Length: 154
Image (cartoon, rainbow, N blue to C red; front, side):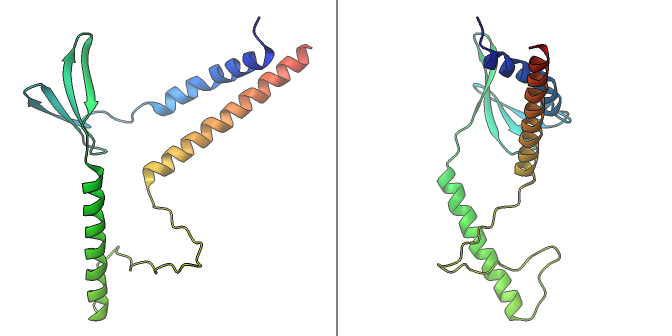
């Protein structure tokens, strides 16, 4: 026998799955990936995110596996470019030259007592937060609706 709570959870999950499937569908896959032939298969480049994967023939078809990336090297290069960028901005401002259009001056350095947290601006992160928020609200609404139906039948 299935418990009432589990049945409510399954009903709520089923109510939200069509909405999740609609939101998860890609906008337009045409031209998103670039493939290059290599000895073991193909290298797939995601033109939207920059992710690289190696696609090869397996026993049950083709499969793509994300290529390993040396994150430390990337982080070091990003840090180097940021400091170089900050120095260039500082030089421009020191010579009373304007910064290029759309460029912001470097944010102030936080002192030890400051508790301000500057979150990075990332439209992909904002889309994920919005999506999760919508799914959560739909799930809560579906659970409330099922609870009302169960209580009305009792």
